[in-house]
Length: 107
Image (cartoon, rainbow, N blue to C red; front, side, top):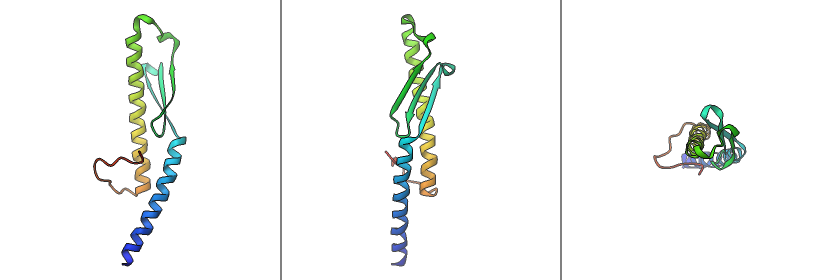
């Protein structure tokens, strides 16, 4: 029973660290870019888009599809960076404990 009490204490500590990490994620911002930085997307640590910047030189009605593709690419870049950041932060919280496949924390 001594081990069970110890496991419960560790679980509570991990839960506390998880709450801290979620608060930190909400404040953190990740920037993704495409087109050599002409399009940038800023995401919160929780994946919400906060800003989209488009260089005026790209705004051309005849090339709308190119601009659309650049926005998607910038978002994809930001999301990949965010996923890597979250995985790193989760590793710190869980102490390297591998979670079962399919479980995505914190969201």
